[in-house]
Length: 281
Figure 1 (cartoon, helix red, strand yellow):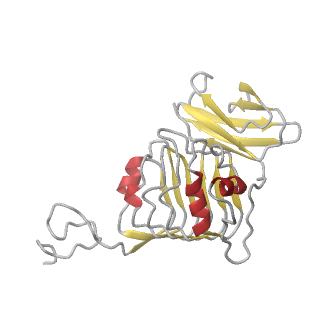
Figure 2 (cartoon, rainbow, N blue to C red):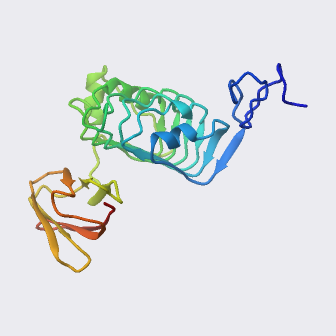
Figure 3 (cartoon, rainbow, N blue to C red):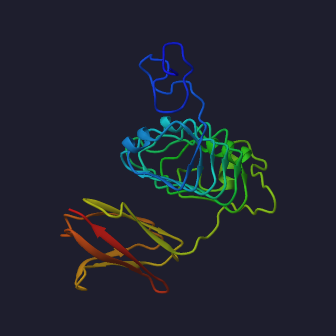
């Protein structure tokens, strides 16, 4: 009896008013409890518009992701928001997001159309922990970062580096967009223009099928070596690293890496990082 022409459309996955559309114009009323991990455009498009809050972390990662338009109803994420290794040109679709309880990380979005702007985050007013915007080499709209910093209180460290020229630090962005203080700090948060991170190696994607990107953060400015060995300890690849090198793309087929588990090791004169890589070919 509640489903008929002229009925009020409510967010329930049903065409309540019989107009051929589902949940159009309905207010989001539900809370998603648990982490949300979206690794493809189809997964983003399938996410229910009935959720206005994610009680957990939100991870958006996948080179096929080109639009966040379907996430327009999300207003709050209580945990961390991580957006990395996507083909997004901007953050449009997250316009409803106002509050992030944990950290916001936007990095390594250099695929497809490539991330050029943070437009879409203009309504974000609170980031509970850290803000990290890095390794987005085409992110040239510095003033969209400026707008984010001006509006969103950052409860922890603000880490900005390795984006397009002029968008590589808080001071760079301030100079590009009119100068003055652009950081709003709630509580006793601390902001840094550029902050040295702990040495870290990340592999994207992992598991990998055809290529893998090695991201190096916080390494000392020394030349190094990347070594990959198989499960039997046999070395399958040795790659020299230049001092300060931060990104390395590897073709798995070209290097004879078939399905299996590999150990990736990066060594410099003073540091050693180890990561496991799974290959599915």
